[in-house]
Image 1 (cartoon, rainbow, N blue to C red):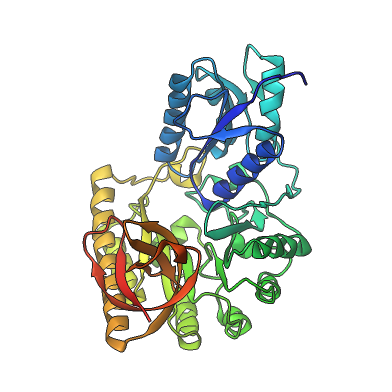
Image 2 (image 1 turned 30 degrees about the vertical axis):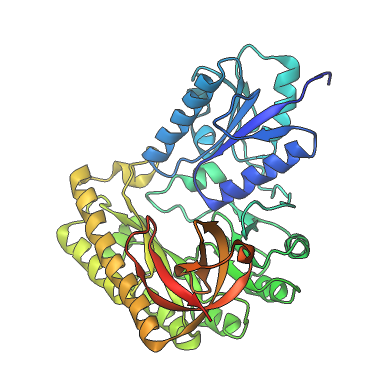
Length: 435
């Protein structure tokens, strides 16, 4: 290769934590080879957009970022990778400025493509590997860019839920070898990171024993907190509770991929659990692990969801007492079973139901915080950011707090007591005092 100038590349990441991890790996690959990584707002030689396709809005954002890159530098090369380009490679290749179209089969090909396209100056878009081999693409992130470190342990999903396109764009389940996960966590521990989040497309499908892995990681010196990015409600059964209840480093917080709390809707979604299982499994965890909290993903307005179905979800969500939730209107994904179902709901109905569900979750969050204030419960907070004299971070059970303190405490885990609710913050935040 005969490029005699400094190469500048900017990355834009859309979507999930897995994409965030993969973008960091792409960035590190390029930095190790002398490439300068810039902000996406800067004029660069190459732009890499790591896309998402979970909703129609996600795809809209992907196209928007491609157009933005083209405007920032009309002469730049644009590399598009991720779920959207995996799903619609031909469509993406026709957008002006796009030089390389890759998918999820080999994410680091997006990094390798930088050198290829700069050397060969292709006149028409080049396609990367789009066929999944069923093999895990094994790489590590050596220098994470967040205080809380994401560790990708799994890729792919085989659930084939009726509304979801992800199994088609991420391919079959494959997992990172057990010893390689341990080595990666040992590496970030030596750098001073204290909290890790195990993540994947379907993290609970980790093929080499998820609870065994969590136990092994808890033995690593320097690691003080272990989280799971998202869990299938069916996975956190009493056996799971029994296996993890005595692992002190596992945070008492689980993010549930609920989607609905109505049995009729869950059945139509082809989810492999029902509301009885949700409550039974959550109760087992609550009775075994102090201070535990639950957050969730929820979809409103699934085809055929009538007022009575939504009322069941609303009532059950209130009973679950969620700390927070990611609430989405159902997004029709061509190629999925749900896209062909009758009784597709209008957008205004979906929006209204999202608002009602959000209000119910907010009421639950406030009650949870007020109960902890009343009981004077002590928490430990990992401070992640500092702004205008206030440290922000999350308790072990994932309550976001703001505390007046010194910037030097960023990255530290500190004991606090909740004092109130910050009504002015853009994000739901509790106030607290260091003890």
